Length: 223
Image (cartoon, one colour):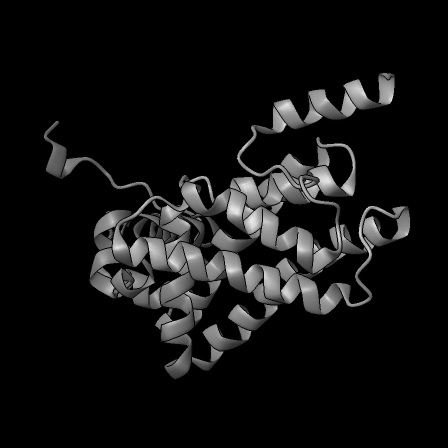
C-alpha cells in the first residue's frame, strides 16, 4: 500500500490541541515569542495552518499561553533547585547563581520579547504581570525567611525582592544584547544583594554550584 493511500489517523481534539501548543512552545524556545505565527506553528506541528487556526483561533491567546507555560516551568525548576539548599542566604545565593549562569538565554529572549509584545497584546500583558508576581513572591519568601532567622535585616522584603529581580533581569537582557557572559556579574550581583537584604559581607556566594553550597551548609551545621 502506498503512503498516500494509507488511512490517516484522526486524533482526539484534546490531543491535537496539546500537540499544537507543544509545537508553539518549541518554536518560542528556539526563536522567541515573535516567531509564533500560524505558519511557523503549523510547520512545527506538521499540520495545515487552518488546523492551527481551528484549535487556536486567537494567536494573542496562544502567545500568552506559551509564555505562561515556559515561565512557570522555569519557576518550578528554580524552586526545586533552591529547595535542595539549606538556609535563606544559601538559597538566595543559589537563585542568583542559577539565573545568571548563562544557561537560560532562550528564556531571557522569551522574557524580553514578552515585555515588548505585551504593549500590544493585553492577554500577554496580564500573563507577564502574573508571572512577574510569581517571581517576586519566590524571592520575597526567601528574603522574609532570612529576616525571620536573623540572616537578613531589611524591613522591606517585597521592595528588595523587586529590585533584585530587576537587577538580574537587566543584566541578563544587557548580556543578551551585547553578546557577553552574564556569569562574570554574578558575584557582583551577590554583593549588591547582600547590601539590599542586610546580610553580612560574603554571605551570598553566587558562582558556587548548589552542591558546594549544600556541602558548606552541612559542614557548618556539623561543626
